[in-house]
Image (cartoon, rainbow, N blue to C red; front, top):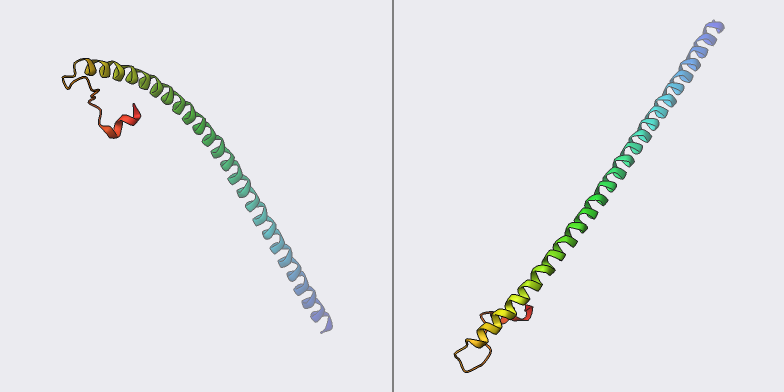
Amino acid sequence: MQTIKDKITDLNATRKARSEAKNEEKAEKELAKSRAEVAHEIRLAKEAEASMEAHVNKAVEKAAQHDAKQQGQQSKDVQNSQQGAADSVTTNPSGGMKQSNIPGHLSKFM
């Protein structure tokens, strides 16, 4: 009878050891899986950051081109407005006072 009890005790101990080993292995697999997921997310974040940087650089270049274009148009507009102002002063029938077609609230931009 004692030997049967010893066998049952040994079987329970073996079952318990197997269960613990299985749970440890499962935890290690989950840890490895989560580490792989984290590494994947880090890689995606780095790729997104590089892509964002490329888009920002491209936007800066386009903004610079747009500013240069606007500078060119403004200088042409200033020349044209000066030409137009000179024309309006010479043809002004109101006694020689400067008169312009530009509204007062916009004249500060000219």
